Amino acid sequence: MRKINLKAKNLSANANNQQGPSGKISLLVGFFILLLAGGLYGVVFYLQSSQAKKIKLVKGEIVAIKRSLDTNENFKEVYDFQSRLLEIDKMIKEKVLQIDVLNRVSGATLGETTVKNLKVSVKNGASDLDMALRVSDLGMLSKQLESYNTINSAEQATLKGSGLKDDAVEATINFSVPKKQEELSNERD
Image (cartoon, rainbow, N blue to C red):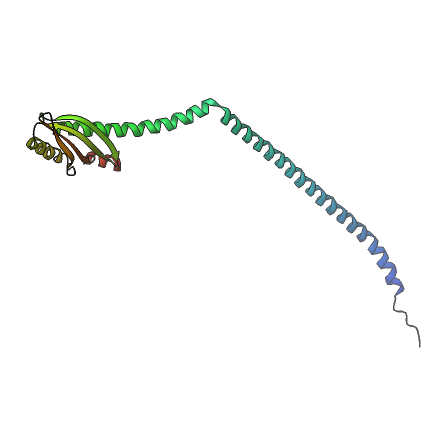
C-alpha cells in the first residue's frame, strides 16, 4: 500500500504565520479581561467593606443614643410628662362630668332633704350615685325619689334601705345619671 501525504506544503507554512499574531492578540485580550474582572472584584470588595464599616458605625451610634436616652432624666421626664398630661385630661373630663351631675342632683334635691353621704362613681359615661338622705317623713322621701327620677331621663332611683331615727326618716338610695345628649354628641365629633 502506498502512503498518501495529505498535508500541503504551502498551507502549513501560511497557517503558522497567521496563527502567531492572532494567538498573541487573544492572549492580550484574555489578560485584559482577567485584569478587568480582578479590578471589578476589587471595587466591589472595597465598596462592600466600606458599607459594612458604615453600617457598624451607625449601629454603634444607635446603641449610644438609646443608652443616653435611657440614662437621660430629661427624656424620662418629658415622656412621663406626656403620660401625665393624658391622665390629667382624662381626670378633667371625668370631673367636669361629675360636677355637672352634682349640679343636676342639687337642682333636684328638695329643700327639706338633707344629704348625709354621697358617693359618685363613673362607669361607661354614666354616674352611679349612692346617697344617704334624711327627710321628715315617708311622704317627703317619696317626693324626693320622684324628683330624682326626673333628672334627664335617669333610671329609677331605688330605695336600698330606710329607718326612723330622731323623729326623721333616714334612707339610702341608688340611681344612675347618664351624660347629657350634648356631651355625647361632642364626643362623637
